[in-house]
Length: 519
Image 1 (spheres, rainbow, N blue to C red):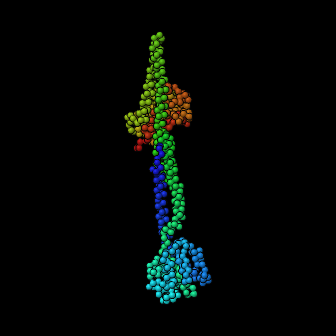
Image 2: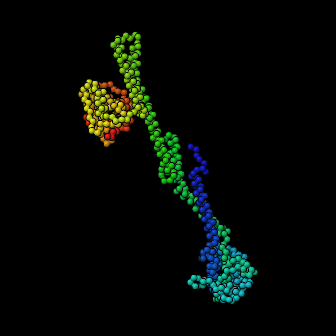
Image 3: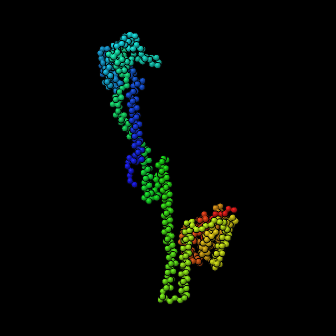
């Protein structure tokens, strides 16, 4: 069987579909993760711009109180190195600090300076030094925000747009928190309120997220291949090999039926089909063997009378051989006997073929067992008297009738009685008995002869099988070897069974079980 292309394989289609689905899911998850990461500062209070600016302002309050001339640029950029949030710090003494990790918007520094100096255009009078709220008011004149418990969040802060040239509203949106030292605003912290740009997050996390996604993809594909696809692929390969073995003539090949999915059901159906094929194959082989054996047996059985006929006819045809009339008549008698023997063998073969093939006329009627036994005895009376053999007939109550064809049943009992007479010595005894059983009526034919050797019992009903060489007391010539085969065929045609064995006295015993007529 040629190998199919890999892209047409069911295994690869499922695998590639699984990979594509997993890759799509990972891509969607990655985009969602990046989107959430880029906007986490607005979603999580602990990372909001206001909190970030407030943290820097609180830190500067302590630092500027203790070290007014500290290098703020080095200090702040060394401590606040986040890559996702920019900041600007301006002081009244002219120092300006901007984040190095993320560049702030251009107008953020001017906005912070405007709020620190109070130069905010129309709203400059409401700055931290312009009154209207004192040290604890923000540049818009509003008090600092409170927590839920009522405590102040920290120094004042405001939200606005930097740039004095824009009237306090033209710059980018930002958070401004003043740094108050001893009640005086000495610096201003500005943090953009917008989320960090997505390109920045992509630049920083892109490689890591890509590596993680590839790792998840490889791990998912490997696990799926090992746990899902590989067992299915292995069982499908085993099923394919079993099919190829059946095609090659190995009728006993079977596919594994492990698992409870469609592959297992397919393997089970295939095994049932293979079992049926094997049974039919065995039946064909047995039928062929039986045919060969039958031809060999028929040839052997017919060769003996044909050889005798040919020999005696050639002898009588010799012109230079003077045969007296008595010898010629004796030779003619032998030829006649061998011819009748051939006719008997051929007739038995035809009769057996009709019985086993279901042909021929067949009547189903009530048969009287006592009348059947009586006709059998009348048929064999001369032979019984010549050998001084006693024939007993016993029919138990309830076994007087059976269902079947009276002529065929008589033929079966006659064949068994003929064998019994042939193998029963002079002065012996033959018994014909019938008794009821739960399954029907059992008819027994038993003689007082030497019996049947145990090793011959399994083949006693085979065609042309004879055991005369192992039995003594035979006065009649041997039959064709088809009598018991015909008996078995007749009994089976009646839906019964027959069994051969030896009786308690040592003689041969045949038991026939036939259906009983219901009264």
